[in-house]
Length: 243
Figure 1: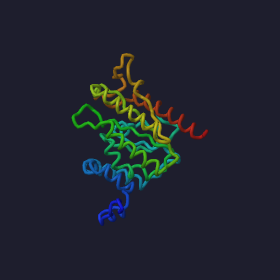
Figure 2: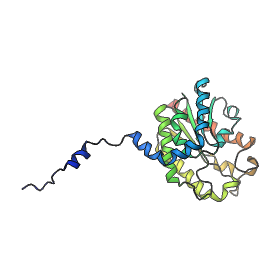
Figure 3: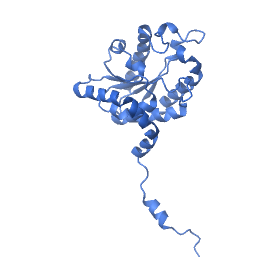
Figure 4: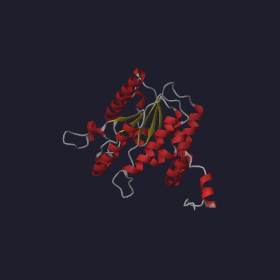
């Protein structure tokens, strides 16, 4: 007598069901964040879409996406010269917001590289995300960029130490370590180290590089930040050309 289990109708139905697609998985990932992101940012994203419709990106432009440090970077074109920039930041964004809008922010542009900075996921509040939660969202954004422009490098900028959020700095350092790990494990994704430059010799934030809120960079701070990002861009693109 056979000892093999008898297949049931339910087994047959299950075997015929298709495996979840990548889109399904992404939908599941973003589902907890979509409503809040849409409520807060939809009008802002629509403004960028209107701008995209009536402007032409610079050839080989550098796409800048992320939170308020990107949005407020009025001197980006000067600080990153000779690179030409496509600024698409919006203030207060978290990686959960960026992940929800990644397709609409990234795919309209034929960029040479994309630079991403988001600094609001860990700020010392009870509702802070964990580095593990943020990691899934970061990898989603990276995947969208790579699917659209496979040869364009993605640069993840380290979260800057600031006086206003220094109590949360140990947790932010864990987030930065996660970003570095993503860069080590994802093809053509590169880390931009900035934290040490914005700390004094005794590991305190350099308050002279920030405006009065001690969260956002001032002109001098942006010049330094831009220099670090520009130098990393040059390094990454030179390595890519020589490969």
